[in-house]
Length: 200
Length: 308
Image 1 (cartoon, chains in turn yellow, cyan):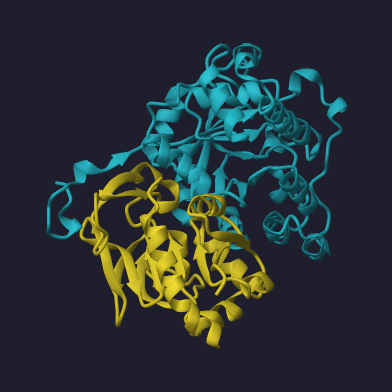
Image 2 (cartoon, one colour; image 1 turned 180 degrees about the vertical axis):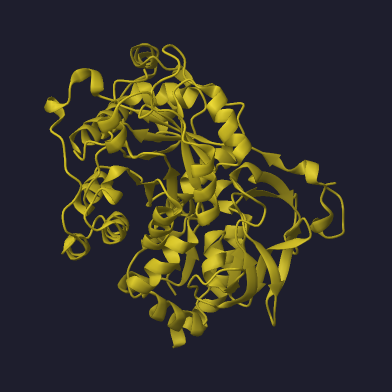
């Protein structure tokens, strides 16, 4: 099998930062803005950005349906900050449209406004070595995780990283650091999901 | 703390580092590919958010009205900003006068997400911009060329926008400034090591920063365009020329159909490289804001010349 292709949803947000990190890991990574481009990737990263902006654009430009179909066929998806909000089943105190694929309730801007944005070291379940440099920017937290969604890291007593099968969500931004460990974790998910995804 | 074996939720709050360069520049990175809209009321802010704005700029008057009414333009009334902050979930920015660090302190105390040290307001200091580094809140500053951009970054700006000519509805100045910045960066990338010091002198910026820009081929902070964007095609033009996002001031709420124009400019910014999308969203928008020929604006009323 050829090497996997990772897409980064490229409507709005810190798309380039993910692409730069993936290039450093020598991964074939590309920007995804259309359903056509989505069909060519083995895994998708939804970057940081504004969830009200991107959530609405997914619907307006016909990306929601093909994305849900591919997730149904077990394509791995990882959302950072906004990405995790867009993936969530429920956003607390909000009616904003989401994909509803991650069995969590998230609270937006949970730590406060921008002046509360911070860098903080995190201990992440199953991630060896030193603490991970967490970069939190107007970050959400996970209020509740249901079913097979498992919290992998917490801050101030709230979940800030979640895994549910092939889906991953982080409140923080590994793409703004030099630490590739979570990107590698996602690449592993993609490698393992590929045979099943290709068989469909 | 590092060898703690129990879960991270016991982590000490003092381990949080707020207001670092990374989180200040980081918020600007999250706004990339988006549109930031000037608003003067909570209703306008809601329209902007629903149209897909990534942030709003809370103002008392849009630049077109500041231009018309004249007088001293200051930081907006606190109640105006507060009501807008209460109305939306997206980041809220507000303007402080050039050099007026106390207006900036007040905005930070209010909890604003981003401060625009802006030439649209009447400058408070003719010599010094605000020292932006000690602030926890990030700043965006205007620039007409690379030297200005680098000086603002040296002072701590976490984001740069071209100045353009605010409230003119004329894109020509924004394009001039954007091309100045991107062209100057391209020239820097061709310099040899011994040429950096002379380039730094010409640009009026520190040589380390000049070298960093030359090596990266870009500014170390996000660069948006501002000042004169009035149509979806204007926004897409700026994006194709290398802007990372767009500020729209008077262009939305001085147009015939603000909600539709706002949405159209957002979509044209996201799909700037797809003329079919720009075509679709440009249909039946009604009249854009009225524009001004730059040469018809009296020299002393040009805003872009403020700051240095």
